[in-house]
Image (cartoon, rainbow, N blue to C red; front, top):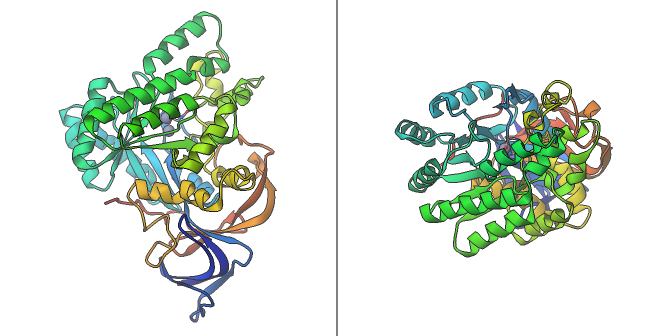
Amino acid sequence: MSLLIKNGEIVTPDARYVADVLCEGETIARIAPNLEAPAGTEVIDAAGKYVFPGFIDPHTHVYLPFMGTYARDTYETASKAALVGGTTTFFDMCCPSRAEEPMAGFETWTAQSAGKSACDYSFHMGVTKFDANSEAQLREIVASGVRSFKIFLAYKGALGIDDRELYHTLKLAKELGVIVCAHCENETLVAERQKELIAGGITGPEGHYLSRPPEVEAEGVHHFLTFAELAGASVYIVHLSCVEALREAVAARLRGVDVAVETLIQYLVLDRAYAERGGFEASKYVMSPPLRDAGNQEVLWQGLRSGLVQTVATDHAPFDFESQKTMGKDDFTRIPNGIPSIEERMNLLYTHGVCEGRLDLQTFVAVGSTNAAKKFGLFPRKGAIQPGADADLVVYDPSYRGVLSKATQTQAVDYNAFEGWKIKGRPGVVTVRGEVAVRDGAFVGTAGRGQFLKRA
Ligand code: URP
Ligand code: ZN
Ligand code: ZN
């Protein structure tokens, strides 16, 4: 099976040029102008379009038992939605509860995902407790190709770990050469403020925002990075939302801490006003950390441009509005945290980043694909357009104009957080290891073709 993508403008963080890309089997075979199509090759005309490496979402929750319920997508529905949006690889958080052993959790996530995804994926292994038993199992999980941990400073009693566990997780990561991703919010401050707000009669979704002001996140980042510094570990801050937290990350980097920073598409394009919408609409925008004042957005865009922020993820965590967000109708602490965005991430980043002059095309590719591949051990198999790389490609049509809506989305959730938003550009064709998975914006690939990516 071969595929020739002709006359597109290839864009990677290092280069922009017009050429043809010949894919043979699952990988890229040749890149040059005016390539001949071998007999039987499918030819895709990409004139006037961009050819990007498949995008990588470094932070999703496809299978997620959380706050008394489960995220809505399956690996089949989420991967199809990812592909329609140009994402060809995602990293799902494997998050066992504290009551579970890590290996049991790893086996559950493996069973949930095996044979279901239409695109390739990997895991970050959640460390939700740390003792001699779990340490031995974590070593085995790392040996099987999961080379990143995820810890939570938030979600007291459920997923969060204490400081002793944090320190030893970081030391183990350092020993094994594993990167530690962290959700940074001070869980004690959150828990105490939640109690105060409820006692004061604030039970609606706005209480979520009020319980987690920027200081709560900044303290979490400072706390985590102090531990990382002393343990000598390489770390990655997930879903950073505000200037106060970014300052802490930059200060740590200046001290020599090996820290990378991720923000989310929702923090770049949505602000606190969405978290204050009436009629319980705000619950659709309940996520942790919460949406911030609009002033933070320009700082995050500047962070992407200057390299202080390396990746844009989704933290895709889809909970239905009607039956799940409403679990917290009388108590904001019971609203399942999270927002769906695996399908919209790159179209929003293109529309609001590239088209608005906030990001150049090469930075767009870096923060949407290549940086994550490099950070998490997939480069140059993923995140690159070069001979030998997996033929995960996005032929992006910048002339497309459309509107985001629940009515037309692929992800399995009963609302779209960006309902009615206009987009400029979309992936016309998307390939997964040489097979066309999206044509004219619709999924045409094979569920179950996606592979679990073992990382070296
Ligand atoms: O609100 C969020 N972010 N939900 C998903 C779980 C997490 O914290 O990453
Ligand atoms: Zn989180
Ligand atoms: Zn998350």
